Length: 189
Figure (cartoon, rainbow, N blue to C red):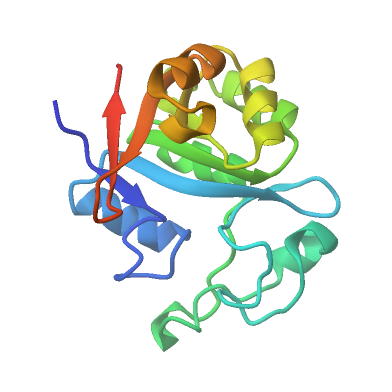
């Protein structure tokens, strides 16, 4: 079985990590929405890749140092094209609510309260639709601790070999890279 995962949505059609990008990804046949989670200074979870808002909004500064009020006021679309002017950054809860009946979720935790992410996943009853990963050892282990029912993705080199990585992280997805550096994912569904 092949599943199509959409990295930050259809980010060549609409601004990455926004509702129009994910809507377009699903319209183009996507089944798994891959996105990143970061947390505002006041603890609100957002769908955003970079640690700052500089590249993908009209603002500047680190997400972790900005409040949700400041983040909610940013334009996340006009950098991409004028027709997306006024587009807002999606909060994680609104994102899950919008797509919970239409997609699976591949969540990369950049830096956020993993217990809050786990609570939200349980509250919306979407654990069976979620995969999580993180390049931060702390975030990865926190997600495993707070949401053991959610499938984990791990890079095979993290523990030196695939078997050790699977055992330590209870991984359902193992990421490999070929000689050209292209990522390949093996899933256990």
